[in-house]
Length: 165
Image (cartoon, rainbow, N blue to C red):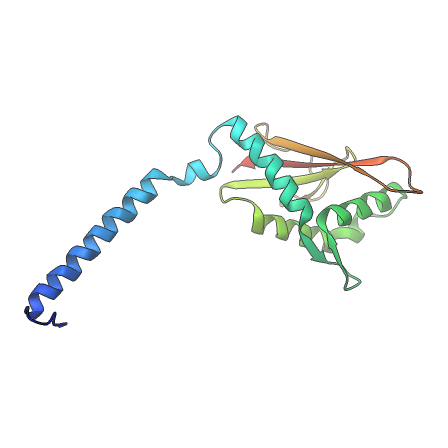
């Protein structure tokens, strides 16, 4: 037992047990004040705001590309979209899309899921699988238009969908 100086060992043990009980009660109160369902965004407006905030943060994430250089998620999605416009096979981007999805999974709140669509096309970054069009009805979407740059015509719309799982 631990001795508290002038007191006996039993006093120190009682103090330790009381401290542990107080900490357990305090932890329970904190967890009750912030339930897991609140983290997922309980209202439609909150989920819509989260979708917008998530899209902004997600698009800025830098990932290593196949050429050992680094690029933002938005740049990788734009490059993929341009290649698909020129007739590239979507299967050639499976590794990049898996890395993009993994980065998003590390960023999205627990209790939520997401998918990405570009250029108004099918969803191609999602746990649901490439080309999956059956997104949940209660999803929220956030879209950004990206200008292609000089020498390339048109712009790309990147849409990020978020929903409660």
